[in-house]
Amino acid sequence: MKGRGFCQDSDSAANRNSHLTGSGFDTLTAEGGPGPQRSIEGWIVLVTGELFGYPLLIKSRRLAYDGRGNAVAKSEEELASAADALGGFVRDLYAEKWAPAVIVARGRDGTISCYLF
Image (cartoon, rainbow, N blue to C red; front, side, top):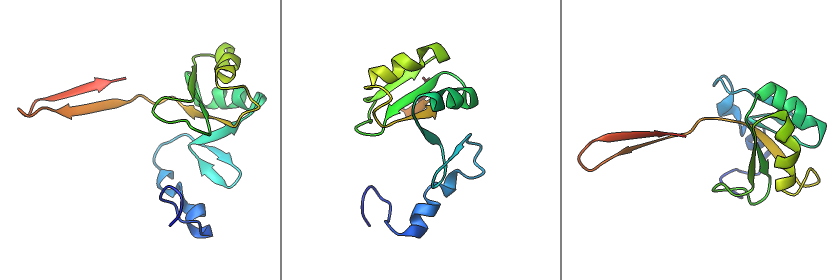
């Protein structure tokens, strides 16, 4: 086992995102198989934005975690500035469809609170 939990054999690479099949996620077919995101450069982000809708999350392929390396484009007009905030289209960027997030927490007394972002 190498990397971040993925074996490096061809079977695991082909089936890495198989859990997404039929799950209702919108995906774009990319080289190497389906995925919930798409590498972008220039005009490809426009097509991705039309398919996924806005807001669109633009992410850096390197060091993008815990909110770092991310920019949000709320419309087609904001795509260039979102990419520029991450170093421009010359960097390895990809786009993800915006998804609401929820945190559910239970207190020691058993009360449950939900936070929708």
